[in-house]
Length: 307
Image 1 (tube, one colour):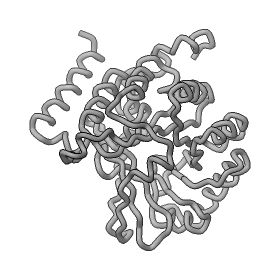
Image 2 (image 1 turned 120 degrees about the vertical axis):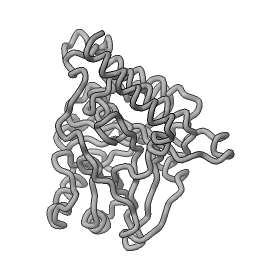
Image 3 (image 1 turned 135 degrees about the horizontal axis):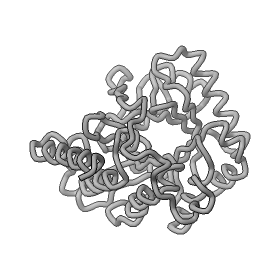
Image 4 (image 1 turned 30 degrees about the vertical axis):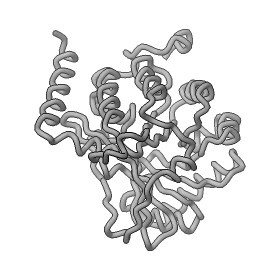
């Protein structure tokens, strides 16, 4: 048996043991009510890109075929390099969010956050000709200064690291107009928790098959709301990872909605900022993949172009 296979078996064993002990469930989902189990999950696709455009274009073609749009974040550099792509996506109804992928915003001074968010806003609005209503920093990090800056710039939503397991939720801090979208969050082996996302799991040592097991567990749990995230240069380009998303898009247990329809369906929790949970756990700042990207199989349409 190869070292990779042994590691995968150990990971599966760890998750199975946690589940049998009643420890893994809450990290994936809160127990749904009987009514909730009868209704499809309210699902949102979120795409992130700061590497290249090919995966975004593949995702766009696939979502067009299904009549679905997504929330999409891209670095200012990628947006500036491919403005026509992002203008087209926005015209189709994609919610194009501002992004700062270099540093997390935790404990960053207010003036610095304001300047970076203003720069992202200017880029998004110049290219899409629509208001930038959503913003997220690296690791979906935010603090009170982020909300202050969002209010100053008229930004409706800040993306926050998941705080309710795989359940995505929205917090409305009473002191601010901006709301916090807490994204879906899942554990993986000894590498802690992270987004329900190809990059997040790949960086924690997951294979595409592992990701499929995690995604199935989440989809089977009957959550009311979730966000399925893809760094498109992984999920939109590599066969083993794309197959997980392809299965999720076809899954009848989920209704995939455009951003505004999705947020209208999520229960909003108003409470003082000090009572809103914040998740700062990141154990994969340096990726530890089981299979490096150059060793993964590309989708056929990308094979002739090289990796």
